[in-house]
Amino acid sequence: MHSYSLTAPAKINLYLEIIGDRPDGFHELVMILQSIELADRLDIQPSDTQNIYVYCEHPQVPTDETNLAYRAARLMCDVFGDAYANYGGVSIRIEKNIPVAAGLAGGSSNAAAVLVGIDLMWKLGLTQPELQDLAAKLGSDIPFCLAGGTAIATGRGEKLAPIEDLDNIWLVLAKHDNISVSTPWAYQTYRQQYSDSYVRDVTSINNRNAQVHSSPLVKAIAHKNKVEIGKLIRNDLEKVVLPRYPQVAALKSAFATQDILGTMMSGSGPTVFALCESEAKAIATRRQVKNQLQDPHLNFWVTKLATSGIQILATN
Ligand code: ATP
Image (cartoon, rainbow, N blue to C red; front, side, top):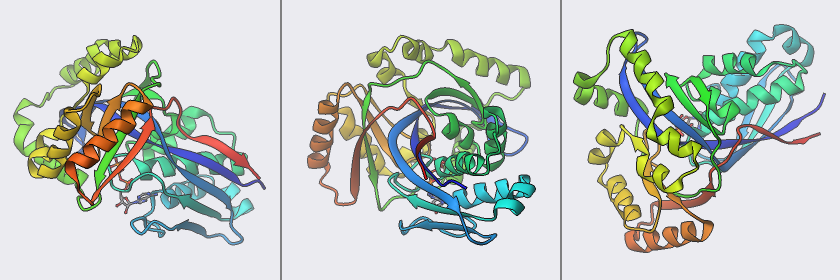
């Protein structure tokens, strides 16, 4: 049996609009999701026992059954019982490059890589829709992480419509290592403050979902109009996270003074990104903001938009 090494890229939200409540307690969302080149590496190989093992040196990443990569492997063992009985357990090593609890879907991307890795290792020959169905069982962001690129996501984020891929835009990510934002807190607080504006009936929700396809941001993406894209990015969760975390708001303001295309918080934060025209501009932006804020807890990454999700790096 072969072993596989895969790259699991992070994602940012170019657009996150909260349109209403769902009967399952989640929010009805309209998002535009975008893969970036900053990625983890996962090595997936057979274990000598029936157990699932996760190894990761990052102190904030659990290696027990709460790890999303572990949960993905467990799901594969449960769904494909014959293959599991035949081939045995799985050993997963995660090289963590994506900042943890950052609104960049690092854990979700790891889970997506495990689905792909085990499919290959056990020669299951799953189709993309079959992998997407398994991914949706594990979490809302995981179907997107599988396919990657640029996509409109609706429902809880699991219904995907790929759009024109974007690349050739650089970005600076910045995150305070002493701030963490709870995603459930952000959505609950948004509900408390803004549920008056929620769309409630199914027809209106469907209309809102349909509208995004002809929205100015999707048109700008189709035309690869970087300046318009920078102006049109949106994240409703900023309305609750920025007032509660002034340092995140200050970071966004510092980016906004630079020669960039646009700046926004990703997901429920606390990561803030700045879209830049070139690598040189991204590097200059990082230097300026770092000097301006002088905060030892602030970490920066320069990376680029990416056109793909999980990729195979090596087969052994
Ligand atoms: P999202 O944007 O999907 O909400 P995130 O980027 O904010 O995700 P993650 O990096 O995925 O957050 O991690 C969130 C929490 O999940 C972490 O605090 C960590 O303890 C736990 N976790 C479980 N599995 C993983 C994993 N494989 N990688 C990173 N964190 C994981």
